[in-house]
Image (cartoon, rainbow, N blue to C red; front, top):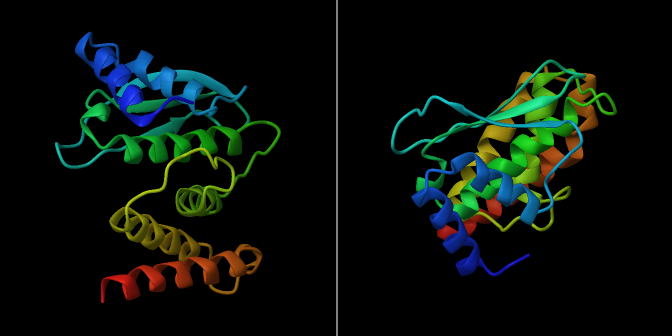
Length: 174
C-alpha cells in the first residue's frame, strides 16, 4: 500500500482524465478488496453534491457489479474507501460461497465492518462523525431483523459492542 498523499495524487490524475471507474479499480487493488464474485464497476445516478450512494447490483449467487456515482472522488478519500469496502463486503455476501439472503443481515455486517474493520483491517478509520452516522445505520438494520429474532440473537454481542462504541463517541464530545 502507498502513502495517503501519493494515493490521493493518483486518484486526482485519474479524475482529471475522467477515468473514474479505473480509479475505483485502482483503489480496490491497492487495498486488496477485490473478490472473485466482483464483475466490475458501473455508474449510477449521482444523488446530490453532499451525499454519496454506492450499490452492489446482482442476484444473490451471481456476479456483482458495484455501481458508483461519477462524482465519487469529490468526497473524502477515507469515506470513499470505507464505502467501497462496504460494497465489496456485499459482493462477498452475495457470492455462491456465502449467499447471505437477508438484506438486514447483509447491511448489519457491512455497517459493522465500517466501524471495526474486521474483514478489511487495511481500510482507514472514519471520523467520529461518520462512525456515529454509520453506527446508527447499523442499529436501524439490527432493529429490522425482528424483535427477539434468531438473527438479532446471533448479533446481540455485536449490537452491544456498537452501542458501547457509539456511547464512547458521544462521551468524547461532551
